[in-house]
Image (cartoon, rainbow, N blue to C red; front, side, top):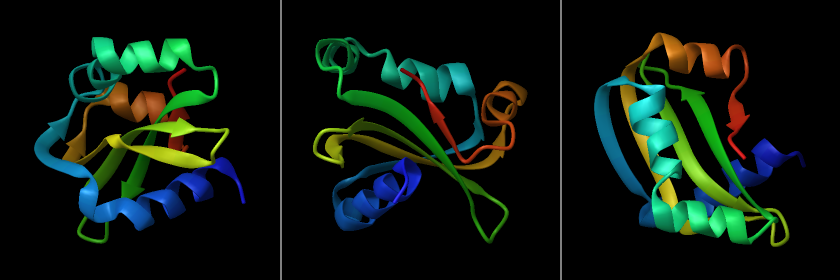
Length: 109
């Protein structure tokens, strides 16, 4: 199982506990990057080399997107539940499209 499959499986297991928001247009700097740069979250990433920050993009059947921001612990092969945010959006800004390019996941650390 690859990293993205592991993260998706972990998300399925904790779906009800994860915070979700809706934005009309997802902005990479405002909605993704800034979330990972919040001081407490950034401290977790910096203090533990097994924790990585990832954003996963899912194309939804209705034409919208889910972008999942999460911290993933490589040692335990699990997401950190209270450090996960799902953003549903109708559209991605140009910077977000560029960052993901043709990938479903980007690693931010």
